[in-house]
Structure formats: C-alpha cells, structure tokens
Length: 357
Image 1 (cartoon, rainbow, N blue to C red):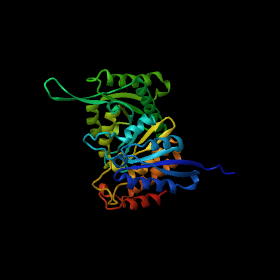
Image 2: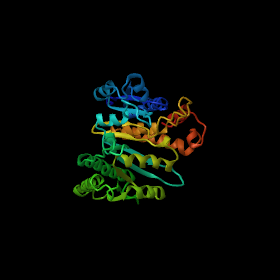
Image 3: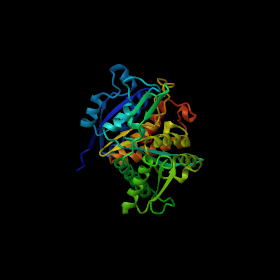
Image 4: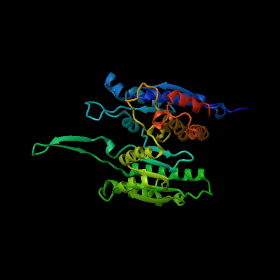
C-alpha cells in the first residue's frame, strides 16, 4: 500500500518589484514536481514589503507573521524595495521576519555549472539575527553642533554557537555528498574582523572555534579563519579554495552578494532563512525596479531557493531534482535571461526548467 502523500502548506510572499514575477515561478515548480516524490502542496498568499507599508503603514503585517507561525510549513519570499534614505515608521520586513520566526541562519550556496572557466562550489552561512542588523541606531547633535550617528553592533555567544553548529553540519553534509573518494576535504572558514573589533568579532571567532573544538564529530573538518578584508581578496582570487564560510550578519551579506559575481549574476544565487523547524526560501537579488513588469527577470535564484527550502524541510530528493533541472538548463545555455546574455523571458526560462523535471 502506497504511503499517504505529505502535504505541505507554503506561504508565498512576493514583496516588491520583480518578487511578484519570480515567486509565481517558484509555485509552478512545486506544483510540477513528479508524483514519485509523494508530495502535495497548498499555498497561501501573504503581504510584506515597501508597497505594503505605503498602503497599510506596516511593512510586515501581523497577519503575515501569524499565518506563517500557525498555518505554514515553509515559505518563499521574493524581494523588498527598502529605501536608501530614512522613511519614518519603515523597517525592512525580511529582517523583521527573520527575528520574529527566529530564522537564525541564512544559507547561500554559490555554485558554477559544469564547464565553467572558474569552478566555484561554496556555501556562505550568515548569522541572521544580530550584528548591526539589530537596527538600534540614533542620531544626536554633538557639542560643536554637528550631527553624529551611532549604531549598536551586537554579537552573542548563543547566536554564534548556533551559526557555528549549522556551518559545521553543512560542511559534513557536503563531504558526505561528495563521497569518501573526493579529493576535497570539508573546510569551514570563520570570517571576522577581530583585529579591530576584539570584543564583538572576537566573541564570534572564539565561540565558533569552541563549537569546533568541543564537538568530536567535527574532527574530519578543517577549521580556518580569515580577516574579512583578506577574505574578500582571496574569495575573488581563489574561490575554489573555499567550502563553507561562516560570518556575522553584515560580512555574510556583503560576501554572498559579491560571490554572486563569480557565477555571473545575482539572478542565479539562492538562499534559505533557516530556523529550528522552519525555512523560508529567498532569492539573493533585490526588487530590480528597472526591469519590473517587463517579464525578463531571471527566475533561477527563486527556483533554486525552492530547492533549498525543500532540502531543509527534509525533502532532499525533490530538491536534488530541482537543482539538476536548473543545471541542465544552464549547461545547455539555449534559454538564458538577459542578465546572462540571452533574450529569454521569465516564463520561457521557467518552462525550459519544467520540462527537465
């Protein structure tokens, strides 16, 4: 007798800009997964973003949080158009969402396809809840009458321990997938600036190192560290050297967006916001207002984010099928969006990947 299908309810949060074009692509992929995976999906549309803030006064409505907590197994988040200047009452909804759901890890794989001139296959694991992103800032007037702005950079042992553990677990998992005959050994590189910030970055570095030293199961993993500025240099000079990179929030954000240049486009790079028992897939690109509504947004980062979401929900075979379909499309290179030098529209790329599922 066949096992009953697992039914997963997925929250869809398109957000702003091209998020409204790529999140429907993610839904199409989930709906098209072969029945062999014994999965069924239902969906709920949810609001968040700057456009939502303009309409309602809240960038992240309480209802969105409530539905995600009570009614969803996972979610997809598109993009957000956060303004670069201060807007009274506005705060980034994705940053708030990570805190509200305690999604403490942002996992961003950066991988080139077979035959790439520069082979890249690394994962950046970014602490997701603190650092400068606690958003505790103030501006005041100094005695000389000039303005001064300050921001709190918060690093805790608890958050650093959690992100350290998930980084080492990902390194072990990647080593298992590569197999015992692989010449690549698992490596975690701790990125910090403790030479300048010995209290905050120093605590991050020391805590992640302690996670490594105190857990015998990580003995097969090498643990190294890089000062963040030298990390940027080496990442672009020798990307194939790295396996798993773990960093505080700000450095991880910058490194992962920069690493996208190694594989051609932010439109290719997925991420997942991970907590204990919940995952939100999120493409690394922004809302791209310059191409919004033109139907040319690259959906691949979102489609790969669907795979990541499923992977962290325990559906590794379905995730693998999605990754292979995307890689097959990219290697063939006949259906590329404009950011990759092609002229395919969003839906044409989606359909090319769908036929490979």
